[in-house]
Image (cartoon, rainbow, N blue to C red):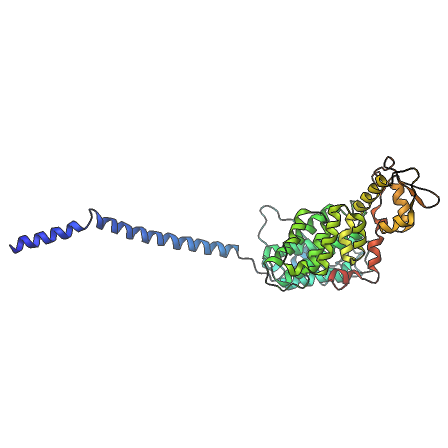
Length: 396
């Protein structure tokens, strides 16, 4: 009896366990252990990738690595701004370690990874940029300025290259970018009208837009504070006047920034440009400081042309005479330059200093006939007493 009862109990207990349950449980435990192993392997791979992607450390404490200085000296590739004074006429001028600056070299396929000894840390890069501004770009004794620009432009590219390799961020990165943006904006005004073999405005514009984009990204993602953000947000809008992305970017800024005087003025000028109200635009431009006027100056030709075109239609009458001095006031130009500009567009100015507008007489100037640099008085008047150093360092 007892044996039968025991057997029944055992069978009832076994009936509660589904068929193959122990096997499934063992398989489940095995899968869990395998997934943990795979997860650990993935985490180890991710950590390995992070180690590989870590920015290389920089150890070069000079503006130019010693090996590069030696190579360029032996190959006679030193710029005259980098040699020891008095050795310029030698067959191979001597390189001055205190004046030589690392030049830009285009990355080549198969090129070895840059050595830490050739990379300059953030503080050295900032010191290099300050040297380029103080001793090269801002030097009154170095000329022509087209050569100065070419040298500084190349060396700033090498600074940018070192920054990208190290993935720099923070206050030093922002300080470098701010000075670089000011340099390119100033150069766009200073070298306007120069032959393309000395200065290409499109190349300058391409690099300036890249620096502005990087700087704005630093403002957005960095912890701050950034005391110059108002200045550069306004400069970016004035330089890209009428651009939808630039306008949208400024309108999405925090309220406290949009209500600052510089940005409010830039927004007002941008609105006048979009509305085609160039009389108001030129009147508001009188309130800009020198660097802001430099950023705006590339749009002045378009504004003045449009104004003359509108007046040629609005005052299209044989008996209508428009005072030349009044037109000069509207264009923010001297009377003599206003008369020259009218003649460039085919608009007649009589001997009594009166403008005879005619929509049929308005013509586009021939290529090379309109010299933009002659009509920069609205900008040049603001530079009085300002040095290039103070402008690029932001001390103006």
